[in-house]
Image (cartoon, rainbow over the protein chains, first blue to last red):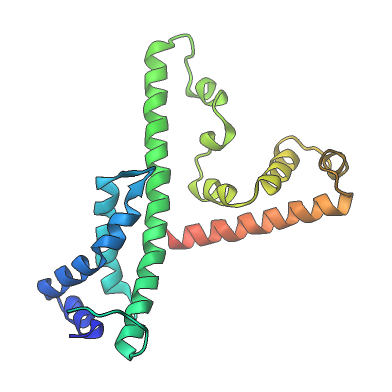
Length: 60
Length: 139
């Protein structure tokens, strides 16, 4: 499956597709959640929400 | 399942675009989060101050003693000021808050009147631009 199909499925409300994308971008989000050398759980949650928003707002 | 993305096919290009899009959103959220977190910490500090130092009654009294950047309530302006260079910030603040003339600043910084004016107006336009950006992107 390519990314475009995955993204379309995620938008259509397929939870598995959303989870796949989340797994795919987890390393990026974790890396971005590190503040002053320590992992910030709250920020990670916020960034997960940002990813979900992006999935819906991104124009293909 | 996933292979290295070389940006060759349309789907890979799309994914790269999505990643870039996500990165911008993530950076903005990071920045907003840090600003909010700092404000929360400052707020908590202020509350603590209040209990220990009863002789300072009003919030204004306490605020007066904090560095200028911390006193600011306008997140957009704060953000803009944090993004411009030290020199631009200094010229901007000196001119706007202390009313120091371009000539005096020029002597201090080793620049001519025009040089200081250029730095000042560049700072102002940068601040305007950044503030506009921040306001637009507020979720």
